[in-house]
Amino acid sequence: MSSNFLNFYNPKSNSDRIYSKEDVKDMSIDKYSENKDAILYQGLKIGFPTNEMLNLSDDVVYVHPYTRRDGTKVAGHYRAKRQSKFQNWDEEVVAQPASKWANIPYLEEAKENNQFANTHSFINAVLNKKSPNAQLAFDMFLYGPEKLKLGSEARVITSEKDNDFPLVLYSKNSQLSKTIVNDKSFKAKIKEMINMNIKDSPIEFNNRDLFLTIKKADISDLKKENGYYTGVVKDFYDFEHLEYSDNYRISTFYNNYADNLQKKEKGHRFYIQVPFKIKISDLGL
Image (cartoon, rainbow, N blue to C red; front, side):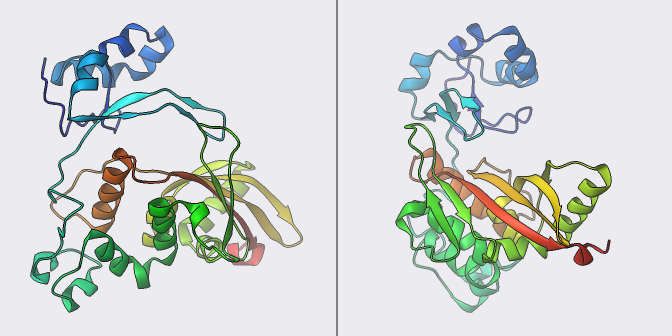
């Protein structure tokens, strides 16, 4: 069994979770069947370390148990740390010639500046003009949504439960709501839901700003009202590591930077709810 868990990634579960020997031993039959492929893959690659081994390892981080707003309980577990191609996120990792970034889409800012003070300023420079919703969400992740002045854009509802996360409830007139209703993939999904006569459906956004804000979300309570369709887009703002490709985009860099902060328990996760109101005529119906 390997004792080096750094950079372990399980393609069967699309995550860096590590099952301990005790996790597998105490798992119900249904839970084992649900995660069988991921468990077998891990067994072949790194085996099943005990909780004691994982607790003593510098290659993993422990994720404390918590309860999602929908009532789903997430048990405490270990995740592998990742050593990115950017070795130390807390240093001036992007203070290098802009030519280093020349082949990466969406980095016009990098061509105009030879260096950035640190990773935060680099990400903010990239998000600033092109992804205002993503920048606001990233700021909430960094500092905690309850510590920011959100104005008329949104309000924060804190939970009385110790293990729950705050809810960021956006306004119907928020920039995020407007961006959503103008998105082509969103309109297509709403039309699909109408044709199927369903009120709830998952959605995955490809628009860069929305991808970096609420990539995989759920549309809930779709209904027709006075010439409009209304509903709510819901999401939980957190991150999982993405594999870099030869042509990796800034969104992967951004995601993995935030994922690394999250693993260090430096990030603030939160729920998002965005009410929307879209004209029936805008759907071409």
